[in-house]
Amino acid sequence: MALQFNSYEAALGYCREQGMRLSKQRQSILKLLWDTGEHLSANGIYDRLRQQGEDIGHTSVYQNLDALAKAGIVERVEKAEGCLYGHKTDSHSHVHCLDDGNLIDVVVTLPPELIAQVEAQTGLKVSDYRIEFFARK
Image (tube, rainbow, N blue to C red; front, side):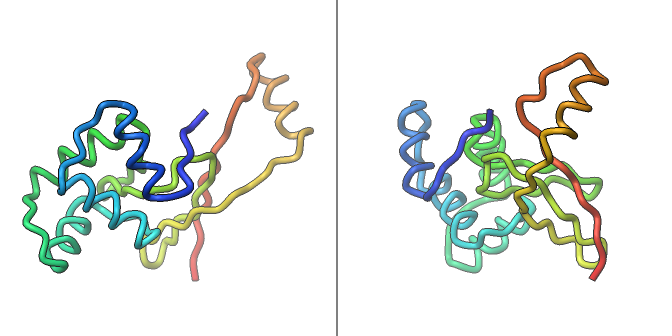
């Protein structure tokens, strides 16, 4: 099951519990993801932080995002154009906008009958799921 954080402060607290170093850069990245609520590329995060006056390099952004994603603190969504990062880590699905490339979080609850059908077909017990939708404006 995915980790779930209901606030930026909760995510920081989890980092501390895990013994992660909370550098100014790491905190800035987390804060940006929480404040925007968007899925951003590493370059997008770098650009926004620089616009805010943060002294951060590309390498630092990539290294911090990698550590945060591996720890389950941020979500990493791999797309053909590159990875996008967001703060929502609990169970959810995505709508990919084919017109502008945006990624939107949605919560979808499948009927129990459909989950039972998947379990019957695979012989496995479903513990979680994510659905990817593709849409146009």
